[in-house]
Each structure stands twice: as C-alpha cells, then as structure tokens.
Image 1: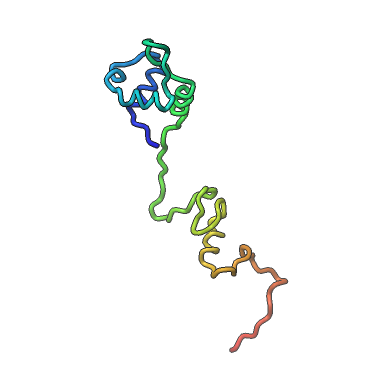
Image 2: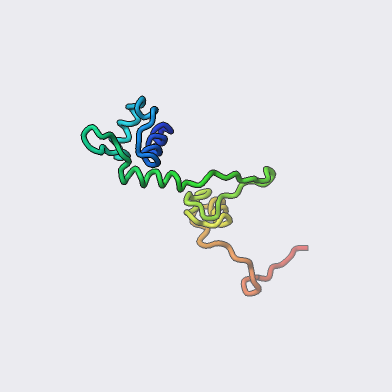
Length: 131
C-alpha cells in the first residue's frame, strides 16, 4: 500500500507539534483516512485529534528508513545475482550459490545430484589414444 505524501505530512505535524496545520484543515479526505486507519485519534468531544500509539510507531518507522544509495557498476560485466538473495536465481533455491544455480539450470533433469568436484588421482581412469 502506498501512502500519499499529504497523509505523511499530516501525521508528521501531529507527531512533531500536536496541532493541525492549514493543510490538515483543508484536507478532510486524508484526515478521515488517517482516523480510519488508526494513525490519528480523537482527543475528546470538540478537542480535535492527536497522534495515536500506532501513528507514533508508523512515524518512527518512516524516520528509521535509510536514504537510498547508488551502486556503480562496470557495464561490461554482466550483473550477477546477490549471493544471498531471497528470490531463487535461475531456477535455483533461495540462498543457493550462483555457480550451483547455473549448473542446475544447464543440467538435464535429475542428473545433478550434487555440485561437481574436481577430479583427483583416485577417480581417473586410463584410456587409449588412437594415434
């Protein structure tokens, strides 16, 4: 759910000042929505509104949101998925390594029981070279 900036502004003004602004007095639609959502509550008959406990927590969550950052990448290098992404990569499982996910995607069904290992001397078989 996306919250309109005007509703955030109203909640912030009640959180910071506790009094309505000119915008709030003109914007009954947003004020009604904040009341319906439990962000604001009535102080008492004819006494106006105040931020609720839910509203205080919501404003604190907004304030705890970090600024976005820019990531610079070399456009010549294909982007690799994040190593511990929550989304499966190339048909793999969440958290699965990138190499294993590529091997799993390229292998025929049921042929990749585990990630291939490098050959050692005990697994090498002699073969004849036709010459």
